[in-house]
Image 1 (spheres, rainbow, N blue to C red):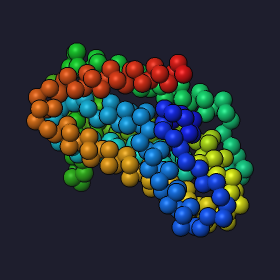
Image 2 (image 1 turned 135 degrees about the vertical axis):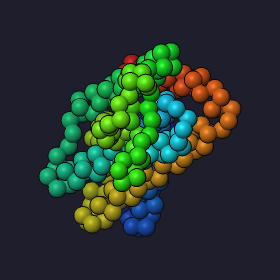
Image 3 (image 1 turned 180 degrees about the vertical axis):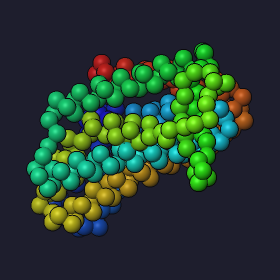
Image 4 (image 1 turned 120 degrees about the vertical axis):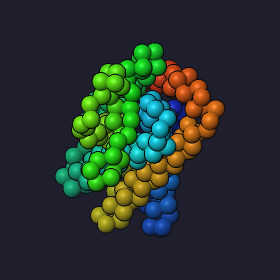
Length: 246
């Protein structure tokens, strides 16, 4: 989320020279995608979705949340660029700007839900295995004793990743991260750059998920699990308010 190249997201590089080799362009696209995935709003959303809930199998839940968020984010960006290249469609600037405020509101909501879960203990997440033995993460509202055995498959992290991609979609549809020369590339080369950009996002968010899972598995953190969840919730509210106000 956020404008490409602003201070809140870090300084973005551009591929300025149309004469750069395809190898250099590919490396740049992968690097830009990796940096994009490390945006503060992305990482905070993943942390806010992951930190609440029981410690049991927390590492698997955190990594699954990060990967799901990254997949939703990448799919929306990829679909937007494909529409721009194939049909000349570009997302209006007003939609992109509004999406930043929506993303901020989501962070505030996640933070408030996290605070409520810490105070009341009535919002919690957990992992269960389906008949095929595959594990799935779920968020539940209500007391854990009232939790029924049945589950509906949750795509919350993927949906969140998709929503957070909208604010960056216009810039990518205009190929701004890759510089003015990107518009002169052949379609296969351009699609390769977009695929590498998406791969960079998936890599950085997945690595963050692994690192976060390791941090949360440290015994000292487990012992202060509610405090850690509360800190993440407060940070989520603060960052969300920043995006809304600025």
